[in-house]
Amino acid sequence: MVKVIDGRRLAEGLRPNLLRRGQAVAERRGAPPGLAVILVGNDPASAVYVRNKIRACEAVGIRSACLRFPESIGNADLLETIANLNADPGIDGILVQLPLPAHIRLDQVLEAISVQKDVDGFHLYNVGGLVTGNTIFSPCTPYGVVKLLESENIPIEGQNVVVVGASNIVGKPMALMLMARGATVAICHAKTRDLAQFTILADILVVAAGVPNLIIGQMVKTGAVVIDVGINRLADGCITGDVDFNGVSAKASRITPVPGGVGPMTVTMLLENTIASAERALAHQQSHAAPDIPQFQRA
Ligand SMILES: NC(=O)C1=CN([C@@H]2O[C@H](COP(=O)(O)OP(=O)(O)OC[C@H]3O[C@@H](n4cnc5c(N)ncnc54)[C@H](OP(=O)(O)O)[C@@H]3O)[C@@H](O)[C@H]2O)C=CC1
Ligand SMILES: Nc1nc(=O)c2c([nH]1)NC[C@@H]1CN(c3ccc(C(=O)N[C@@H](CCC(=O)O)C(=O)O)cc3)C=[N+]21
Ligand SMILES: [Mg+2]
Image 1 (cartoon, rainbow, N blue to C red):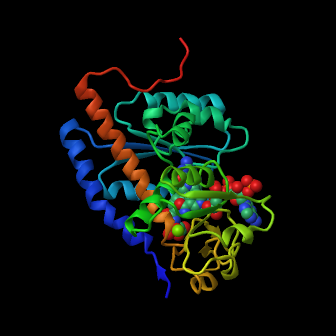
Image 2 (tube, rainbow, N blue to C red; image 1 turned 120 degrees about the horizontal axis):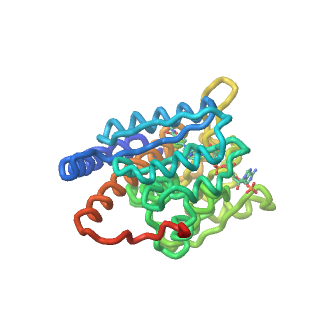
């Protein structure tokens, strides 16, 4: 019988400790952890995600602000907004909700965010740290998947992992994080020939492609752990993952549902990163030390 992993319950279980840590920062610093979310344009899905993040912040005592800008905002104005947030001691985390409009230089925006406030883990310094093991912030979705596996006592070391999807924000960091924990990792993407040939080998199968029913039962090894990251909105307004939940449940030992699987863990890892950032800022302030991370700015 398959066990359905309840990501919402796991995420809620992490909240009391986050609340305690957030309150401890507020007491010692005189200000709670602070998160700024930048939202450009009026994509309805982005607005829903941002509202969820803001609500989750409130529950653990993070002071959050959503900065909304019209679709037409200029590149330079966005960079200036980020520079101001970098300099604001009340802000511990800066998140620029993706996707951004095509005229915005995504690379410039991500590299403008102070490495110490990059709670999404999208700055090149943090991306590079996934390779070298020096990362300051891990990206929230893959981090949430790792936490979920750990919470369920699912071993990673020595396991065959197949990641379906190779994006910069989910698939690639996911593969690196699991490799760092001793897994043997294969990464599949849209140009992979015969996806099933790879997925059938997986002890742990992580799917983040954005294609409903991409993974069906016959592509999954008996007893595999199947993590469905996909979020697909159907015509009827319901959301569904990338995995045929019923068919795959007949083969897998564990499976995450959508909704109620990876999504709530993603949001909780954003809270974790924001509070960790505030703790680091406090420790740094008390040690009177010089900044330990370069800012990548030329004089
Ligand atoms: N639950 C959560 O917290 C989150 C969920 N998501 C969801 O996860 C999914 C992936 O997100 P994201 O990584 O940003 O998406 P992207 O669209 O950026 O990347 C999708 C990846 O999947 C690959 N892919 C697409 N079609 C296929 C296919 N038929 N077979 C194999 N691989 C395929 C693409 O390949 P190629 O590189 O060759 O184009 C690409 O690497 C989406 O549904 C998104 O909504 C995203 C973030 C957080
Ligand atoms: N800078 C940036 N960082 C992100 O982390 C980021 C982003 N941009 N852009 C969009 C994607 C998507 N993403 C999700 C977060 C939470 C849920 C989530 O909470 N899902 C719930 C509810 C979903 C629902 O009901 O709509 C669930 O799966 O149970 C989903 C998706 C973060 N993303
Ligand atoms: Mg989910």
